[in-house]
Length: 316
Image (cartoon, rainbow, N blue to C red; front, side):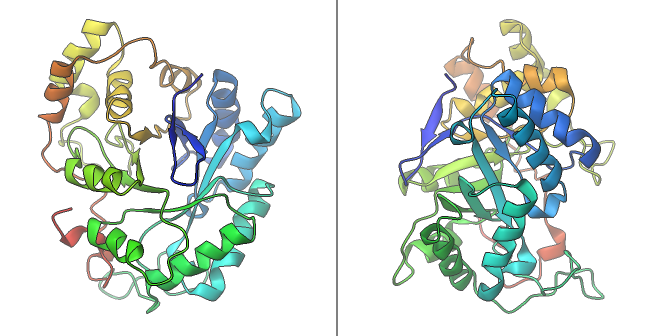
């Protein structure tokens, strides 16, 4: 059994999932099939990844082959910024469900706290390459998401890329019906996020780590930046346990009780990234990994830095 984290709605969320960002439509169906065959139950996707139909095809192939039942899976998607106006929220969720060919999502996240101008352009930018706001308030968007739970379209709702103050605003919202079940954030040894994780856990909100390997394939990565997978201290630990650097970097989150969603479209890596439950990092190894923190973000979100709800202007 894969360990899971119990969410504040009582659901169990498998602690490791498959990330699908930048998984080419041509490869992602196969990636999902390989993952589910290898034992993954948790698949993390989003509208903005533009591959949900293919993700759904992989899920259904495995259900049809009786490898897994729908109720054993934990499927996550995210509301994109251009659908924050409350009247647009349900349609966005229904589009995701129809692309995935599913009746419900296990978890639906607000992808960013920043609402953007509605329309076909998913990144509506002004002449300064800054996101054009829709003027919405994420508290109103949250209320519209709560209605998705009541309608049975999603089992739980959560947030992504929110800071402490923004989560606090939701928790303090008059008439709050459902607390966020998770906050999905960038997290790895170069960006350990200790304060935000502790805050979320103290409020009964789980944390999901994206880019656990430092997202080496993101398009804007520069060739001279440090690489977590090549980090000597990570390699020493990996050699000690006869594991790969990636396995150590993923295990790091599990031992902090943080859900983690490594992305790969390569079959042997998808399988390898799941072989995490036959070793345990020592306290000293954890300290070593935590000591690598340099608050280095792979996702600085410059395109949103002038938005009223830009999340990265606070300490955490």
